[in-house]
Length: 236
Image (cartoon, rainbow, N blue to C red; front, side, top):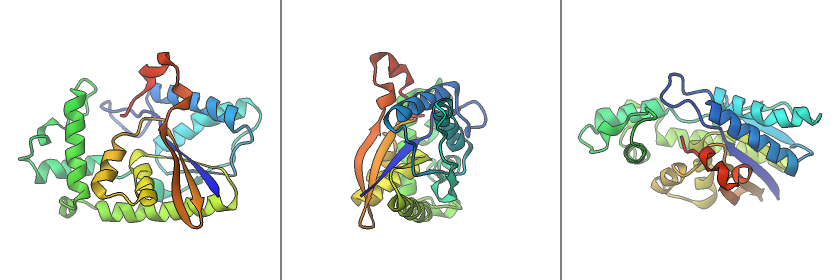
C-alpha cells in the first residue's frame, strides 16, 4: 500500500484580477501546512507532483520553505498538466449563456463582497449543469473530457506512489474531487457536491492498493486546528 498526500492550493486571488496566484492568506495557509508537514514527514517525500498552474507552484513553494529552512529540501517536483483545474470561467460563462433563465445564473459574481450563499448556489448550479453534459456545445473541455484527463493524471501519480511512499501532490479542488470519484464510484452530481466542500490548503490522503485508489482521509486542516485559525478556513 502506498500513500498519496494530496493538497488543494492555498486561497487564490478571487475578484482582484488574475485568479491564478495566491492571496496573502493563501501564502499563510500554505506556509502553515509546510510547517505541519515537516513536523510529521521530516524525511520528505519519495515524489512531489504538481499541476502546471501558478497557484499550484506557489503553494508548493510555500510548503518547501519549511523544508529548506530545516536543511532538508524537498525533491524537485514533477509537473503534470493532467492535474490542472478545469476552466471555471468558461464553464460559468457557458452556464450563463445557455441557462440564462436559471434563477442562479445572474448571481455569478466573484467579488469578495458578494453574498457567499448566493455565490455558492450559482457555482453549484453551473457545475451541476456542466457535469450533466448540458454545456458541452460551448466548451473546449466538457465534463467527460475533464474526467478523462484527470483519470490519466490519477494513473500517473498512482504509478509514482507504487514506486515509493508517500507522494505529495499539489493540485486543485476539481481534480481532487475527481480522484475521490475514482476511489468511491461517485456520480457526477455527487462529485460536484464534494468539490464544493474542499477548503484551501486542505490535505486529503489516498492510498494506492492493487492498482486502485482508496481514501484514507478527506479535506483536513491539521495545520489550522486551533480555534484562532478559523479565519484561515476558506473555500475560495
